[in-house]
Length: 200
Image 1 (cartoon, rainbow, N blue to C red):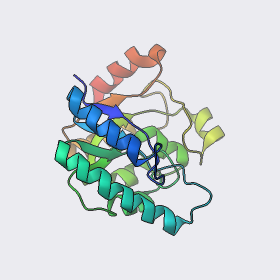
Image 2 (cartoon, one colour):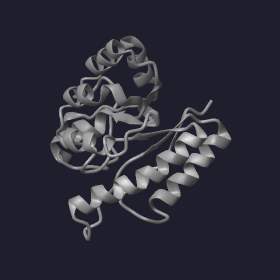
Image 3 (cartoon, rainbow, N blue to C red):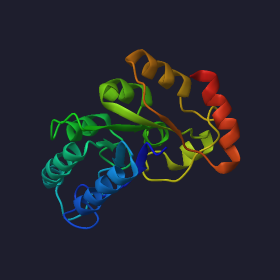
Image 4 (cartoon, one colour):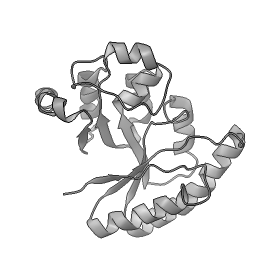
């Protein structure tokens, strides 16, 4: 069963890399029976000011979310680039177009690696969380890449610095009943599954 498909596009683009790609992903999700299409916001093109970037995201989200509603597919924003890994600007994106079809795919590792407190951010967006990527970051990687975004990294869940047990507990208290997607290497998968089962 396919729950969520990843369709990272640029919400600050006007063509194939942005809304066009996401609209295709929504139709594909409908065909295969997926409930969620996951994306992110950027990266921001250098030629756009921040004000222009948010205006373009609003315009694109209006079109995308109208199609999402017609198809009955949720759209989740994953912390992945400069605006979505920060609580204030993530909330700004979520409030650009009020819609029950728009939510958050909370990625525990991406937020932590950037330097944002994952528990504080989760508390701020928890009512919008529809899907979760469980990812852990080892201390060495964190020290090397802190403040960066879009870095493919991770370790076996429970072996790093991400407060996964506390994150799970807060999701439980909020009534979250969605899926937890484990993100790690194939080598670490069995250990990660055992850890997740011990804390849920």
